[in-house]
Image (cartoon, rainbow, N blue to C red):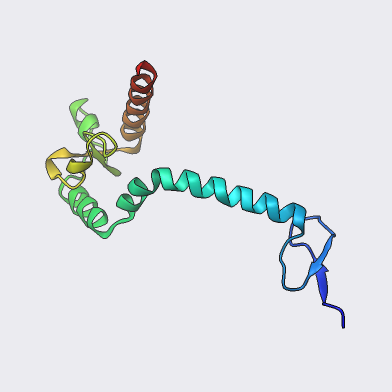
Length: 131
């Protein structure tokens, strides 16, 4: 008795594979390679991603924004603008121990937060190049 066959799940591939398989040999290797690289990338950032998804951070940031609804940088410039993001003064990647310290937080609008993040990233890259 023959095994039922179907087409490979990869878009456009017409290779027949056993019904119990999803991909042909060629595309199975490609999928495994993609998953491996994705897993490697995620493991590098997962500590920080998990922190920002944590209940403790979500509660703290929500409460902090309720108590500090105005962007700090805009206010220094004499403009009152709603804060959108709770930002770490010392970034989590630079000082993990202060991640839930309220004295290390500031309320920023998206524009100021993006500018600060870009500058911090550049500093970190230059620091790593000097080593």
